Image 1 (cartoon, rainbow, N blue to C red):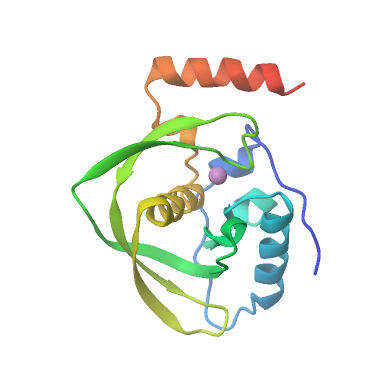
Image 2: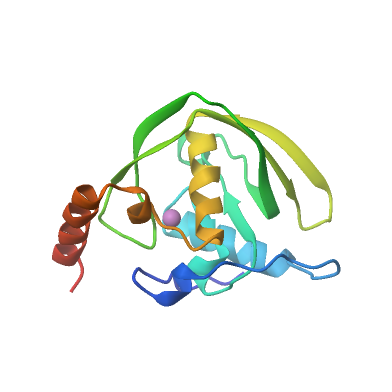
Length: 166
Ligand code: NI
């Protein structure tokens, strides 16, 4: 396994819309490397463009820091249902270190994705897991947390980021 360098904002790769993974692509190695990179960071989610790979893949494991490992490798993920009920909470991003952005997201979602063994899953997620999946899915569409802020909140977050980034 290899720890991969994490791309930081405003690297243009974070703006790219990622391409679907095609049948027959073996993503076992990429998935292992992304999980190792995420755990090492440490973080709870990581999308492929954050390691410079513009494919529709992300990994997440929201409970590992509490001893409840539940790693997911999500290939060609999509949200098939989302609650109308929204919640607002602060989100960090490994590509925007030192910045927390308050983002509105649906409270529950149904996520459909393929794993590296080509098995499809459809899971209901709520709370932080739902938020994490939506955050990572945004990365696959070239969207970062800053893009979901009001202009004022974004300007403030960018000032904070400029102060922590040389
Ligand atoms: Ni992120």
